[in-house]
Amino acid sequence: PQQYNILRILRGAKDKIKVQLVKDRMVERAPNATRLMDKLCDKNLIERERCEQDRRVVYVKIAKEGLQLLSRIDKSENLKFLEKITEEEAKTLSDILDKIR
Image (cartoon, rainbow, N blue to C red; front, top):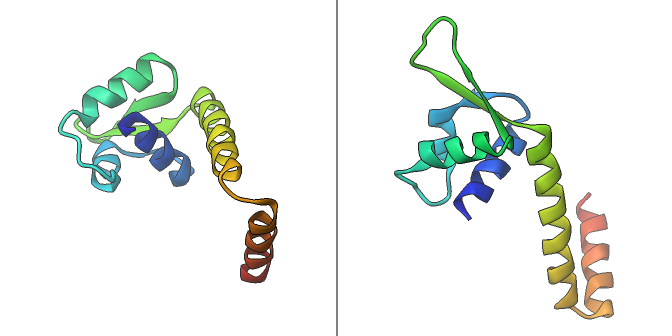
């Protein structure tokens, strides 16, 4: 769940952001967030970059592989959600979402 949270934060950021900002945005504070990001980097799901002006600052961004993984997870979660509602409820939900847009 925490690695998934990190990937979603980075997908929403659209561009590279500071590691500290990722930690601040996490739903559940993780004292091991840096280690979690290390694992995601090792799996080529995120990319890390040091700031040239201040070597203490590290930026991260989601990699293409990370976006692909989230896309597959999202589809799976959407299917689980849709299995729990009736066709009529799905139509009502669709109508409501159309009005909101």
